[in-house]
Length: 115
Image (cartoon, rainbow, N blue to C red; front, side, top):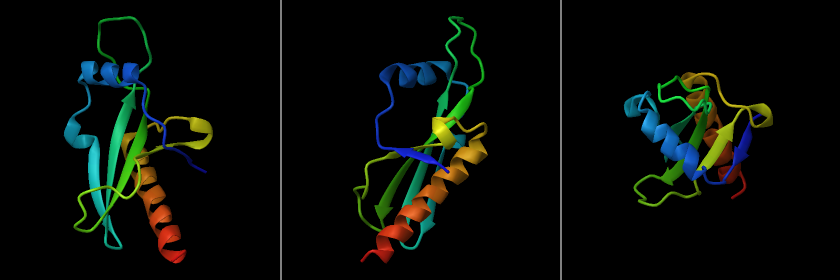
């Protein structure tokens, strides 16, 4: 079971993740195509606050997912945040990317079936 939320990331976590500069931006975002939609999965690394100036590795990841129709400039949904069970972080980038894409596939399938 995945937890999906449309709430925004806290500014403090966002600034902290930008300041760390450990994870490459190229590794943190993927775009997939599924049934005529473009699915963008952007990973948000989360660090444990240590109070140290020494950079550390993230303790986990959250997947932020956006879905856009083919050729449409605006996303169809607000970015959704995907975490593991009970709002736990994903332990690896690969797990977060796959979970984000899987959540988008389910959302697209459910939306297309309800028409």
